[in-house]
Length: 124
Image 1: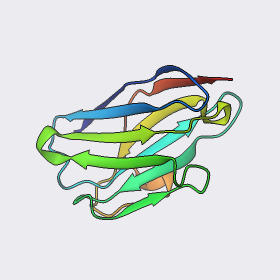
Image 2: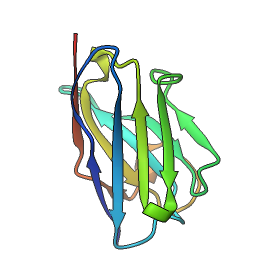
Image 3: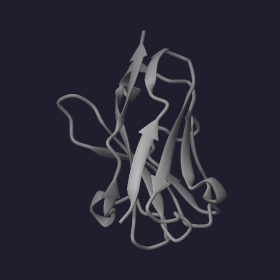
Image 4: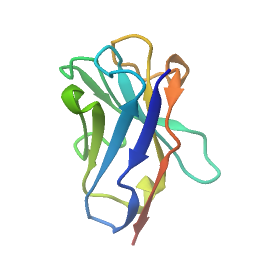
């Protein structure tokens, strides 16, 4: 069993920055590929970023490339999402997720464990 808890969400003005954290318990994250997804009101959940177990391979949705950075610190059992140049279209509940395999994946159904989400609201 893996428990994931996101934190760091909040209200930020457009153009600002925010860093989300995903802390894991129950198992070490060192063997898991990790991802961030988001869901805005009235929309389906969508892929944001992914990172492999070693942290040396990443993927990003086109909408966030150049603005968001996913990283991990396996010693702290934590995954991060650094967000910059935020726009109102980034407003969503953000979820971290863990795979049972170590490779990064952009596919939602390949993730087994999910956090409860943290809300990010960007004002104009």
